[in-house]
Image (cartoon, rainbow, N blue to C red):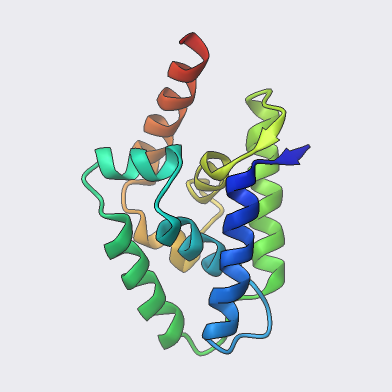
Amino acid sequence: MLHTPRLTTITHLARREAELLGHPEVGAEHLTLALLWEGQGAGVHVLERMGLDPSHLAQSLRRRIVEQDDPPTAQSRADLLHLAWTEAKLLEDHHVGTEHVLLALTQESRADLASQLLGDTRRLRRELLAEIASWRSA
């Protein structure tokens, strides 16, 4: 399954963010941070419609990452991307995009910093799925 160009960009931005923070690996939090900083895509638009400011969320997440004792791990990134791939597959999509990454963050099993910042993850999940459904009906 292919990644969208935006997700590829997010992955590169996440690598840069990890380097800036002095972290040896790119973790799920770096990926989420890059997604928020980039500020584009369906997921970000849904966050904005929910009254959340992606830039503010990114600043809060960055502060929390810096305050952590242990840096995020590559395993957390791999787990998140696998969950995103699973979300895309369940939706019968032929690509993995930023919307799938945010859907993955809404899963109950995700208790990391990124998920904690997103607030009402059930509502976010519903809104994302509704957005995806509206694309398909258009």
